Length: 67
Image (cartoon, rainbow, N blue to C red):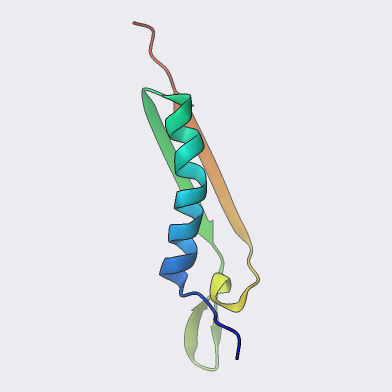
């Protein structure tokens, strides 16, 4: 049996992957919008990430203010 990460673990992995580069850029303000496609299978709401396939969107906005 193959281990499948939970939706929370999948999202935490994405956050960890993008946090370091964002922090290295040292923006004054940062926002991240993350979208996940969900579907209903056999009466259960299932995030696509749980199946190992996904339709997702990720929008990252960084802003710098002049001193």
